[in-house]
Length: 256
Image (cartoon, rainbow, N blue to C red; front, side, top):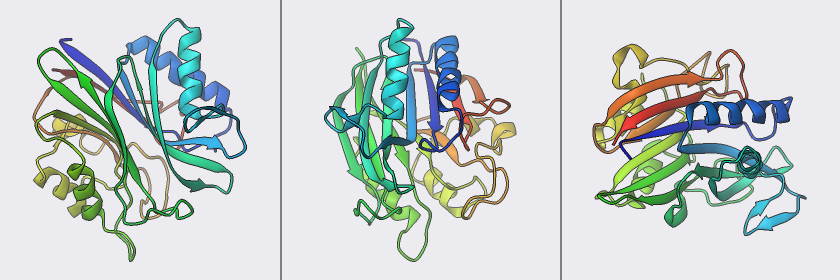
């Protein structure tokens, strides 16, 4: 495997209009770019949906993407952990779609809150990709910002404490901070490399569309980090003109 193609996307639960059309757009990009791993956040499934296996229900957004890929003749593994109750009707979590089987799956809280009914509760999901000469830990995560209840830097510390630093780490998701912030500087000070932003002209490419909570206007808050510098062969922001969520997708191809 000389390179790996990655996409991270916050799905905005099932709150967008034309969900089936949006899913088709996501599938089209996965197939067109032959993406290896898709990191998903705000993955929703309806509370009342039938359980398919473990904690995955038939309305699970990531599971539906997996099934549509199967119809197209592409087999992807799907991994999901639930986190909290959202919008009064969803069981929400984070997930990973991967062409390759992942090992040592873990879903860990990174927030101080571990209350299913507290919207501030946050988790990460991690799975290891075993290659002949290295192990890659793939992480999908959704962080919260600092307020009177949570501290962003503490969430980073908890996340990193669950990871094996001897592995190549690829950590992707919605970090809820922009490159202008002290929180972003903390990520870099922890030895993480901003892969998409490694080219300075792309550092402020927006990934979130409109005002939300502490973010005003279009902002870059979705990232793919590694714990070592890697050569980025391609990079792009997906779904800008034909959007599928209130976030855009971040795509990169890495030389590994």
